Amino acid sequence: MKFRKGLTLIELIVALGILSILLTGVFVIYRSQMRTATTQQSISILQTDVQQALNIIKWDLLMSGYGVPANIQPVWSVNRINSSDSLILRSTGFLVGGTTRWSYVMDAMGGNEIIVRRWNDERQDVHIGDVIVIMTDRKGVVSPFLTVNSRESMSYNNQDAYRLTLSSGVQTAQGNFVFVVPGSQVASAIYWHRNDTLFRNNEPFLANVEDFQVSYWVDVNGNGVMETTERIMNPASVNNFTNFLRSTRVSIVLVGPIDRDYTYPENQVTNEDRTYSLTGIQKNRRRRFYAIEVKARNIR
Image (cartoon, rainbow, N blue to C red; front, top):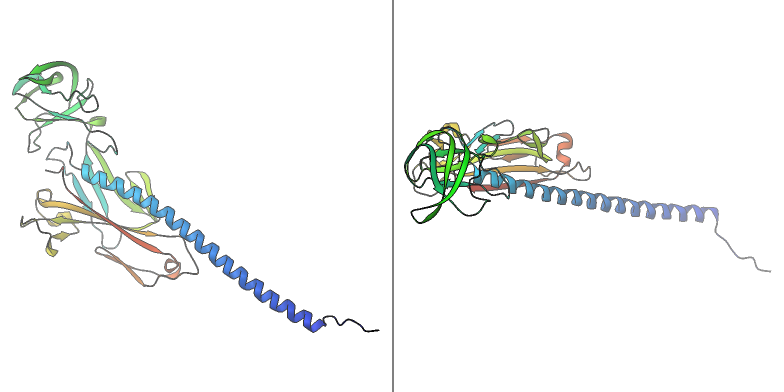
């Protein structure tokens, strides 16, 4: 009678060892792939967030100076070489996706009544109860803030118009601009950075931000060509900054979650005029750089 030969103990141990090695390899590959997938998903979410944030910043920059008298600085920033900058914007039109309202005075008048152009669109027309500011074409203030107490539809010089009764008397000239001031005051949008978070005013605005920098193109020689010497970081370095400002650039460094399997290839990061070193776990984070440059359109 023949006996069937089985596995010896040594063969069993060797087989289990090989199986353990294979399973360990599979687990390591699986864990690496899962970690990579999770990291990529996190980065994708961050990219969506930063694009939405940049759209809002762009709108704020475009609307800076809208309805703002010349004695109020519409665009300003605090430049810091060793940390993030702060950006201060002023406007009466910080309404993302909304409609700003304005009109113009159709004739010179004195007293508490003025005649303004009527657009026949309530989304754009001046309403009863609105607070308005009246300015010259150079943004000089014609009057302090006034309240519209009543309005009467009329035709003036064959054009649709409103006769507005105001809370106080004012002397206006033909062509003076009338801006509706939401909230009864010029609004501020202040961007500042702390602990990997970018804030807009006092509200967290964008997470995972490592650095936030602002720079400007000031066309000092007036030739319409951006030259190296006309890229500045500190608005206080240029006299009559608002008159020369042509565009504002915002630069953001976005960081992903800590990934022990990844090492950032550089020991330093440079963003505009700031350079900072990376140490420890800071090197285990991926970085993406974003920048938008927005031309000034409402500051003069």
